[in-house]
Length: 221
Image (cartoon, rainbow, N blue to C red; front, top):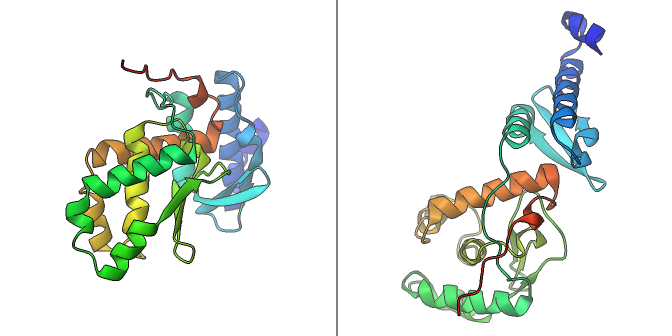
């Protein structure tokens, strides 16, 4: 492979991408024990700027420069640090849903009647899949929020943020400027948004192996 690197000027751009990714994977394997085997599944697309990750047989497109940045940040950085919660059942999600509806009634109270009706009857449960780019999905037809298994046992405030985000989709189908405006009304928005992104990034490259080793938050008596 070193010979190929020395001849990189004769390579096609896609091959250059492969060489650089190979080098990153080699460094990663040398630096981290029990590395999640995602690096062996990097698959190139035809365009130079894009590549895709192959995870559990599925391909997820990703910008190449973003991939390199995430590899660097994740490999040589630290995993997200937080105390895990005990929230793992759909019943517990329902409790958080009710709290969100109550705590942000000043926002939801201004919605149209048809939107309020959907809000009051919306269902919620865990999706049995681990996801790598999304926290949840609002199914408008069935009026149900499916929260990714990726976020089971993550902090309560983060799960609330994900629920709040999906509830806004009852009124705003797209992430337009009004959606973003009201999304930022969530308490601890900046902190929770960053933790959300950090957990997804961690999961893309290491699964939940390292996150599952984090301590649980102690119950207060």
